[in-house]
Length: 107
Length: 123
Image (cartoon, rainbow over all chains, first blue to last red; front, side, top):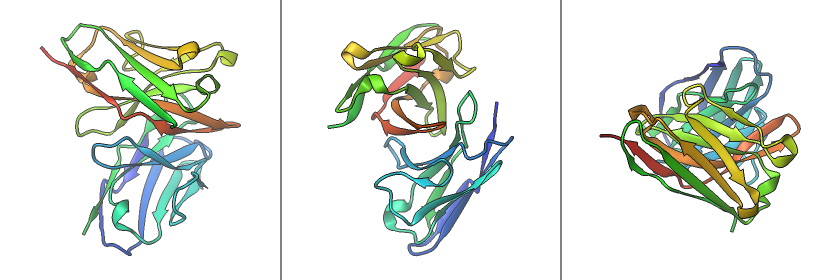
């Protein structure tokens, strides 16, 4: 199975700050990667797919980059609504696997 | 309204069985692969399984942790997805999400999620 490792596990930041979350795959997955945001008690929501394609309706302050084994999710200027958990997911091969998650909290 | 609505969760004893259902509405259900994803209490997301559409023979894929115990099926005439779970273990306790897969070439993403249904496996 392809292992996905996110860092950091927890990120503390303030409104207006930038934030970067990293996801590493245990083997090359080309650009077969998606990012999801999840708020407490809610279902996840897709933000990015194909490593850097922004899902319709997602604010442009979210961006994704990377290929192969290293990927990043960047939020350019944090808004109060952005404090949530974030997960990367690879779909290069079965089984589909998620990272362990990154909790973005208010400093 | 475009939505997915799960049902069928509840409390079940270890070794027991349960069937989850998911009703889709507001979109052409038969055009999409469909997934089940689960989340144990205070844990991360775990992909459970997938069923492809009719053109792909309704073929399925499963996570190793559920293979041989869980079965995904669908009834496109009812816009419904199912998860038959058997030989349930305490570690299967989780919120189970029904999820739509949207693809573009070799790339896809999980773009529509239900609210989830809680399955608790306990004696």
